[in-house]
Length: 107
Image (cartoon, rainbow, N blue to C red; front, top):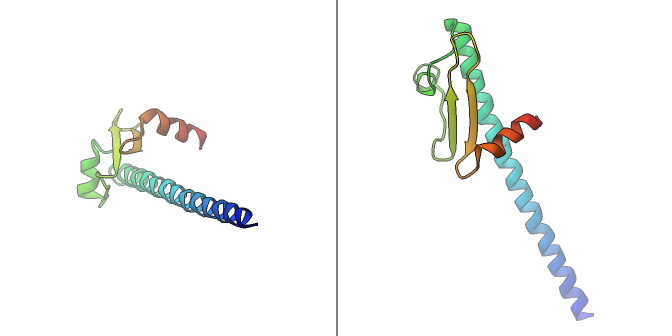
């Protein structure tokens, strides 16, 4: 009976740890989504106000109050033309671009 109690306690402990990790992962995903939405909003605002897409992220940071935690996220920004949406890839540091690109395609 004592062993069954220990096993149930261990199973419950494992379940709690799994739930905490799951919540943390969801929170990280939501934060990444918020960064992506903020960058896209700034890019589109610039296009609406100025008639062309910005040359760089730095321009958005200086003129559109965009703030990016560069210690946590890497942002690849490539302007194609004044009237074409730039290529923007956002990843967490330590995460590959391939992983992020496959997540974007899944959305």
